[in-house]
Length: 119
Image 1: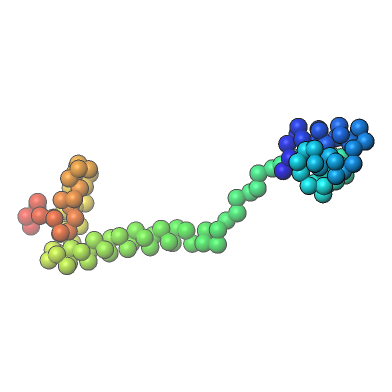
Image 2 (image 1 turned 60 degrees about the vertical axis):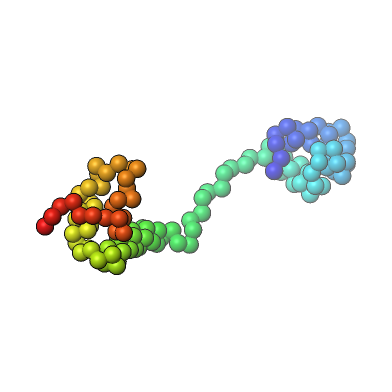
């Protein structure tokens, strides 16, 4: 990719009768680059390439949903392993979560959790 200044320099050097090889050495690019820009006869226009979709783009929402489901299932299984009723555990932490300070979020993990609501 060459700038407009380099293209103008190529044009000027060619008008002064320089060879393609000498122009390429002067501007620091390949002879084929100089030849291509001179044969085109117009200033180079560079456009951003359009962002290509990844192969998994059509499945992106499905994959995100799977991650969310895995997080919930992990909480349920951790509650079971720690001897808690999963329904009561989730009900309690979801009711406490909006008011729980970030510094005390550890208290809501299954291995630290103590029920606040007695049912």
